[in-house]
Length: 391
Ligand code: MG
Image (cartoon, rainbow, N blue to C red; front, side, top):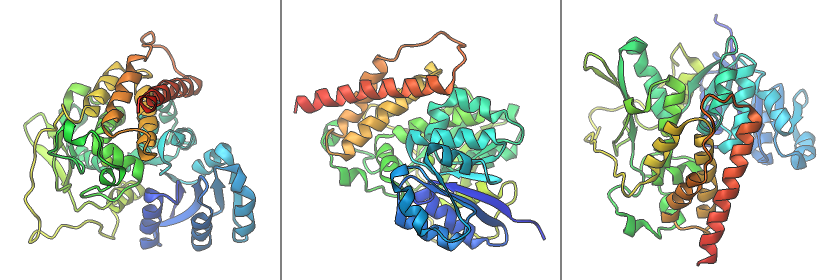
């Protein structure tokens, strides 16, 4: 009998984390949970700890540590703060990084530096932290298997050929809730409209990113970083049904696609089990009921965030860190009802105009990435405040 693969899940109380625990629970003879971590969702984290009995639980926010400690089952050790999250990230053979936003960077670097497999759902870390993630990735044993439906699909499609046989990657985009609408129609849409994603159930930040196509733009950068394919060979195609999760075109003209119903547990399970496939199916298609599969080019005029992301990706260095930080600030302001949907792209664009391009080839440290993130956040916050002041 094969031994159990040990799994750590950071961001365990979020959308990815809870679905990862679902997958683990469905395959008790394959996986065991040794570490769980969350920022501050005490009740759910403690429930999970009681159910899965991990060796450690990490809580990012030190102010709730005492409460969590009093509720944990005997035999589960508590780790606290960013450091605690990082220790938990290095404990298991596979670390699922389901932390939301830039805060996930420390988890990504810790898991890779420990030589672990990183099941990466936190795309911000590989986008903003690309220079430091690349170094950590060189650690013997370290590997990234993406937990993003598109990149999981590309990862699977790439197994159909050699790397020098890849002509281009085609990332599919659902188009989000606002596909087919124009910029003037969208200027003042409300938060609940942006959160009504047609095909995927995800957290609020990524759902808003999906409505602006920034999610797809970030995924273009993510694909470049993960797979080393140049930007002019990464394309985006809108596919409203979210059944084709991405495609790889090979040099002989063959395009290989990965299809399933949209269910994040499939890419999560793929990343946990790789190179083996799980015995439990998620997202199986019933071909008697599959609708039409439609494809169209993205509307780059209305959804300007897509090209802002391409530009930042091509600029490289710390530009993606700036883009990501500006977007996080703008989306948070939108969710807070302090910024119009239409102004998200404006804030990102205005912030990128302030990006000071560095000398090419400069070696970057974590401090540089954190500094870039802080400076971009300050610039973006000022732009949000200026818009608030103007009503
Ligand atoms: Mg995705």
